[in-house]
Structures are given as structure tokens and as C-alpha cells.
View (cartoon, rainbow, N blue to C red):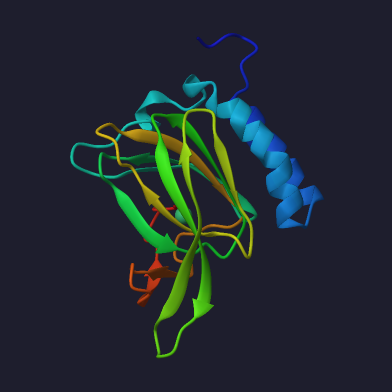
Length: 187
Ligand SMILES: [Fe+2]
């Protein structure tokens, strides 16, 4: 239940704004943002209800704060939704509000042949409500999968605007494809 002392989205944004201005290191930024996001996701009401649900048959991706040095989105994964392995070109912190998500992290190595890479799984995590996951350069390639029959609601914080950014995605066999997120499909 929300109380007058619950940590709000506005307070979170102000805190991340200060941290992103004060710090340069992705490790330090994510290390400072993670406990704040953990506090925020414990209060689902911090995100307005309309940004915690998917449109009928569609994807739930909502920009909650957009700034040059970081942005905050809510992301709703439907049952069975998957984002195959992809990179971000920046730091990130992900927090789970509702249900759970499976996150697989990879080490990416060059493989013979153009447009291919060798993806080695470094860990598979199952994040439940209140959990946070940090992405830093060198360890920021992941696959996301909602293996449950319910929607999963998350907050994603990234150190740059992913919309329009040239990124990469990899199929299970290592085939590389360019990834450009249209609009706010920030994941
Ligand atoms: Fe992602």
C-alpha cells in the first residue's frame, strides 16, 4: 500500500539525474542507482497504472522520463514474450515491479565469417518483484524472456536514449543483425 513516505518516480528521477551528472563510471552509476530502483519498484503505484499495462494484443513500452544523459521507461512483457540477445551501448539498471523475467547474459566473441559471433552464456537469472539487474559495458548483452502466463512489469533505466541508436542483436546460432529501436522500444 502506498503511504505518504513511499519513494516516488519524481524523487527517483531527481536522484538518478544527480548521480548521472556526478559520476562517470558505469559501475559507480549502476551501483548507486540499483538500490534506488529496488526501493522504487517496491511501490508499484510509483508508476501510473496506465503505464503498467499492455494495450490489447500489443507491446507495453512507455517513456517515463527522457533526457540526454539517461531515460526511464516502463516495459511490460506479455506471456511468452522474448527479446533475443542484444546489446545497449550504455549502462542500464532494470527493476521488476510485477511477476518475473528470465534474463540470460552472454559473452560475445568474434566468430569466423561475416555477420556472426560466438555467444557464450555467462549466467541465467530469474528476477522476481523487487529484484534489480545492472548492465555495464563488457557485461550488457542479454536475452529477456517471460516464460510465465502473465504480464511482467519492469522499469528500465538507461544511460542514453536507445530510440534510433544503432545496436546489435544475435540469433541463437550467433547470426548478427542490426537493431534499431523505433520510438520507445527501449529494452
Ligand atoms: Fe535489453
